[in-house]
Image (tube, rainbow, N blue to C red; front, side, top):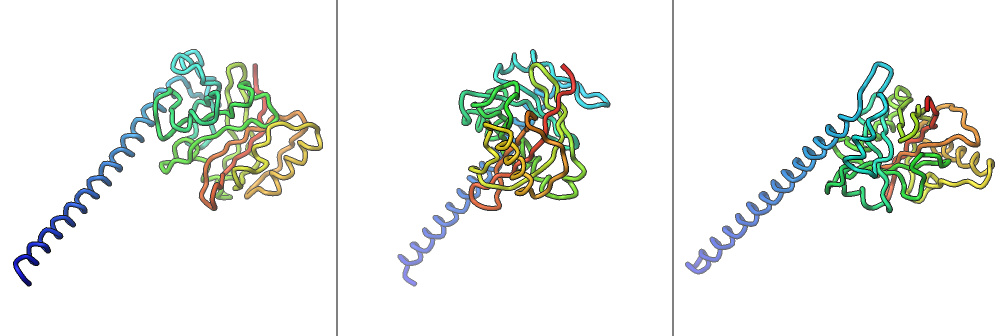
Length: 246
């Protein structure tokens, strides 16, 4: 090899090393960024959960005055028994804002749980749809993923929903995987027969279900998150909303 050829080879090796080091540095920065995001999201969650006082029969209603001083768009609190799902529910003027903002309105890749902007904040619609991210560390609605396991579904049947006015017991009755355009996202029904057909389809399409009496006039909570079985897949957990006290 000539001297010039040797120099070219040396330069190429140096460039390759620089590229590798630069790529490693970028990867490290991304990992650090994700870790920081997770730590910040966890700190926000801990602060928000300070408004909840547990008791032996389930969580007490949250201090909504404290929560709404942090964010007046917090409209409810959701807890699924036996899981890490215990978060405020927000509602904005669209379904985009809380995809990348926390319940304290800070920028966050974790986002927040949010009620569809077209629905009533008192959860009085026939089908009340709440969205949240499926995070790898099981935060937000990442905690819905285990419900696809039949044993887990069978052993986790209840939750709590607190709105500004009332407390509700949740009876979980089905979990499914479907598209983001499925009937799960229908919230208004013109008649009993249409509602009954909606409930029947939920049960037909369910991965797992349990018998739960559901009648015309009952309210459903539909919890939706991204899933990866196919493009635009969604994992959806369904519960009946039952008033427990005023």
